[in-house]
Structure formats: C-alpha cells, structure tokens
Amino acid sequence: MNHHQQERAGLERLESQERLSGIPPEELLDLAGLENGDDVLDIGAGGGYFAFAAADRTEGRVYAVDASPYMLDVLRGRARDSAKTNIVVAEGAAEHLPLEDGAVDMAIASLLLHILSAPRLAIQEMLRVLKPGGRGLIVEWLHPRADGKPGHRISLESMRLYLEAGGAYIISVNIWADTYYSIVFQAPLPAL
Image 1: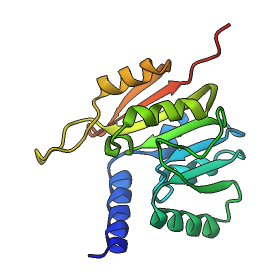
Image 2: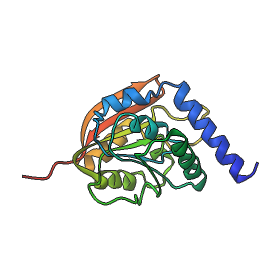
Image 3: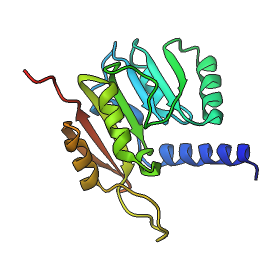
Image 4: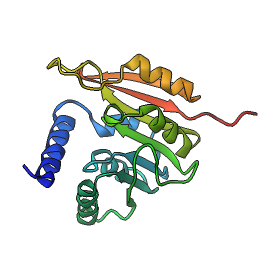
C-alpha cells in the first residue's frame, strides 16, 4: 500500500467512525453554541466532517486546517463541489496554527489531540486563536484502546486539567455512544 492509498484508507476509516458511531456534527455544533456569523476553525479537518456542517450554519469564515497535503486536496475538491464560498482551506499543524491571535469565535479539534506528541501545545494554540470568551469543542476517545495495544489516549480528567491550566472555563461534558467524550469550553475573558 503506497502512502496515498494509506491516506485514503485513513480518511475512509475516520469518516466511517465519525458517521457510524454517533458523533453528530449538528448536535455538537448546537452544544458548542455555533451562531450565524461566527468564524470557525476546524483543526485537523480531515475530509471536512465538521467544517462543512459548520459552513452550512454560519455566514462567517470556516477555516479547515490540516497538515496533510492529501487531506488538503480532498478538502479543496469538496469545497469546490459544495459551492460553499465561506470555507478557507489552509495548511497548518495543530501546534502552529496559521491564524492570528483572537481570529475565531469557535475552534474544533475532533479525534485529533490523541495523535499529537504535544497535545497541551495544541490546546494553547486553540486558546490563542480564539477570541476572548470564544468557544472550543474537543471530541476524543473515552476509553483506552479496546485491542489492548498501546495507543495514545487523553483521559477526560487529563483534558479537563489541560484546559483549566490554560485558563479555559468548561461549559459542558458529554459522552457519545459510550465511545467518545466531547468538551465544550470557553476561552478566558480579559481580566477587568
């Protein structure tokens, strides 16, 4: 299997997981309080599962950021096909987002942070690019790997600590299909 086939297989696996396993993007965007006019960032956007759902619901800009050239090609093709004019596809790593401080109202990281070597850095970056009081949505695996193989997972408790250490305020925590958890948080407001 060449690299391109691996990436395509990875995308297919991710999209079947997202669709079959009860990660409903519309419900999660409701929970996160997405409003029309919000600018949104989808980090590690993959095929755009959350980005396109968000673009349906806001006239603001939706930044779909990924580090993989293959995923960026997929995103650009899908954005063209969808005729959505508010999707901005950009290359970037979660630890070094290609956005200014305070650029977006909402930032999303779905099934991404567990694959990073420095998830805390990515959380700091999420908080950096959010407007003061902006909202973040994180979706992650709830349980350790079922096959018993060592695979990086970030427990709900650890994620809470990372966010609180960054000054974030946790708005809600939900469990989906006993497989994933979601956390909606608010970026710190400026000190009075």
